[in-house]
Length: 200
Figure 1 (cartoon, rainbow, N blue to C red):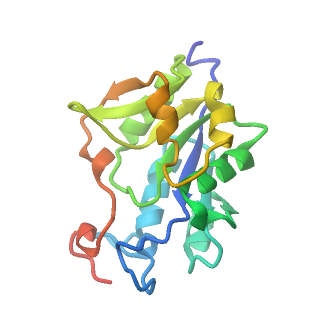
Figure 2 (figure 1 turned 120 degrees about the horizontal axis):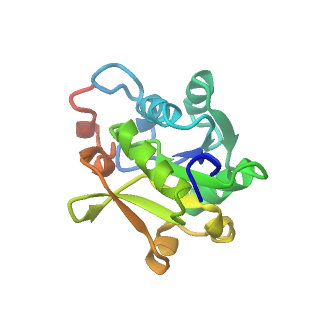
């Protein structure tokens, strides 16, 4: 399969988590907190994804406090997963289902990982376009996010359940590892200190 004829992946932005480690009270949604430059976490993540793919589907939870509005405003398709609390897999399979029938490949990114470089995401898309069924970024010997999937794994993605996301698919199938010089593939916003000094 050549890069000229392969369908471009659809971006999937997982933005439906509660972020309990960031704020157990639920008063502050981490995805809406500003990074050092003032851009909300989820918006920064979405902008990175939109710079690489033409279609981004953001999956959010009901009553998300404004995440859906912020992502819709910058060009994301937004879909609400009513079962988001059952685990990441529910959100992921929901977004994949929403992408059909047009989507043939997917670049799955996390809304709390705004530091991934566009060049990394582009390299993953190219790997899938070149025939990889799964492509994952690797820095040194450590694998990170986001992950790209080809159509071969559509059925498995739709059948996901639980809180492990697509981890089981990665464990039981061949993964094309794409070496990148990008520490952002490991950096999520998990606690307030991860905002690099931004205040809640």
